Length: 124
Image 1 (tube, rainbow, N blue to C red):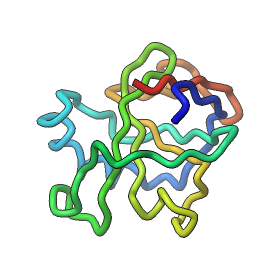
Image 2: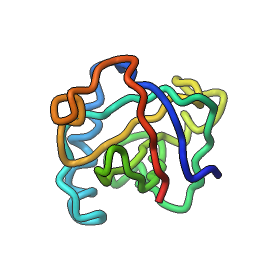
Image 3: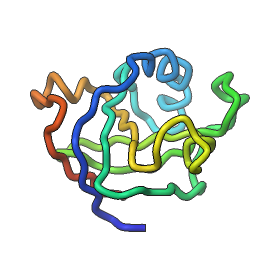
């Protein structure tokens, strides 16, 4: 898997805060991070399939699918790409070139990001 990914900020469906709330305690315990209740959606230049080395199980957050977790950094801010196992295939609800980034701050407000802005993701 590439270590550097490039993409553009893209609006999501607006319901990520529901799922982030469910994973909030898990992230605090497992990754020592208090998440901002929302995600930053990024449309990558190419498709990516995440490995399943790190994941949150359905029974941990009350969902139907495992959530794959990949540590990364955007604009110097550490965070994680999250994607359900279902969305990690061509049969998912989202294309393979869309990823969701979570961290402890509102990235859009902090860095004045808007749809179409280009970002670089460094996988850790």
